[in-house]
Length: 172
Image (cartoon, rainbow, N blue to C red):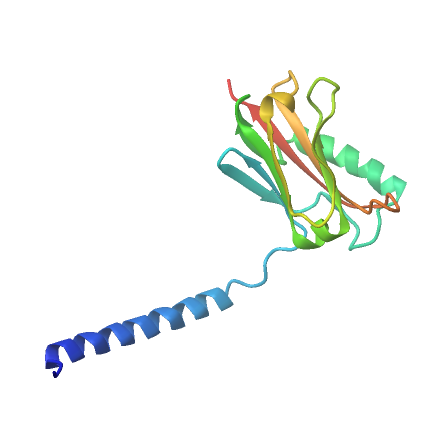
């Protein structure tokens, strides 16, 4: 049984195109750089936004003055509409993701909403990079804008290393 010239030419074309595609994909991937470090992701339903920390001290713990300044800066950024945000409905599920280094050190996330004025999304997470999801109706406040705070913290020393802020805007 012999292959026809047409079949051999077609197989050769597939091999050449396949090799070109793999080579192009490798070149594209190598130009993308390293994954972003120190990012947190807010997930609402099937939408998400990412952000770097608003407060970070190069991997060293934040002191009390830096933490207080961070809170002031977050309020100003929220007022100036400079925080990453997503629209949310009460029936949506909300989750938070962090980079692997933050996951290794430990982190937690909460909102300024809910029945107690502070509602957890993730509590004392270590080793995992995703919180799972929580029903939005348990996280939201009545103002229409809910702040989500993500904190990288060492659970043994209670040192804070980074803080991210996001906003949830309740859909009308």
